Image (cartoon, rainbow, N blue to C red; front, side, top):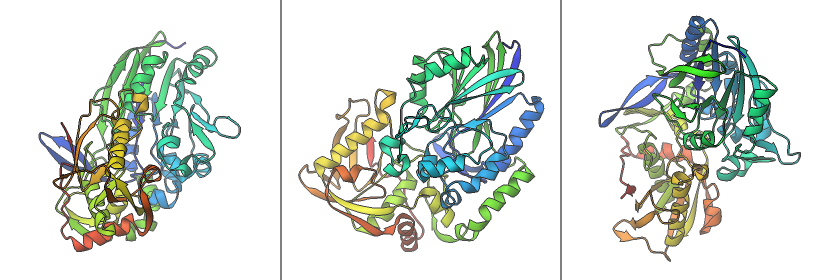
Length: 482
């Protein structure tokens, strides 16, 4: 075992295919402020500078949500990013939204990466064999480092069936101890690093139950941790989203344990000089889409973002367009976290695709008041469940056309206190025309007169911008925590 060694761990998580500079939101006092950040060419510059200073004693890992989230990624099923990612010097990765292209397509895409895709918790349904390798061992700076991957476990539970066709997911909790044992006893590693896309609350519980993990690189929930969390003997870090940040953890390792550490959440600022080679790769990947994405389709006076848990201005825009497109009384969309902000001013097609890169069709269904409350309760439980392992959502399901007063701390099924449509209480037996941007099983469980509309989400957004110039999409208090 090595003694007296130094190692710098770099983390990228939830970059969502944001290849170039984009707007990012920051809190300043009582308001949101925006400034450009991110881009793989600037990330490359930062990483190369650190590697040079460290004489290559640097470990760079990606927690996933990397090959999906922007129009170029979506149109090429992740292929556009492969040359860029292969230029960054990453050591390993795990996954979540990457499964949106279908497991087999994703697997073919992952095979083109020059580093391994790791997941101890994804299995082939027919063979019960692991779909990806569970771990790998890297020798860096005189250290043997065991890297273990855990993919998001909600893919076959809360996402469209096509995402998990032919495969199934576990939490990874049962598999992890034996993998750690192999790494410690057979592979003789000095350090075990978990690359996880379970989410910060889930990772906190997991490492409290499973011993032997030195560092947990956490993803999925987009936390900007300005200092790592120590859970038992495990250091947990998570580093924002959209490639706007890199997490840096400097370790001193003595006697097979972490003796000291320093941490920094690095903002990938606009004034960082882009790496020329990576910048060329980014430009090459984006060039086929630039003409369409740069087209101006409207303007907004509201800053559009997804940075708030209960309601967001970005999704209010999406839902306003959905209501106008369908003539429904209520509208719902998923509580996605991805989507770089759109600042006041011109809105381009790039902005619309950043809101909803999948461009799903809009559907309508008639739901009773009782069904609406049941749906809200189900979503609130998936978001705020006391047991982190039961948390499967992003933010609260976005809604418009109603006001819901909720008790977040209440038990499952008891969080919704009152719901109003306009000034009238929601009536349990009354049917309400309701629109969905994506249903993901909700409308299959509830309602009547289900219809899929011909207009897709992007077209609805464009049409709404054409009629409402400039756009207003302020927060309305749809959900109020009481």
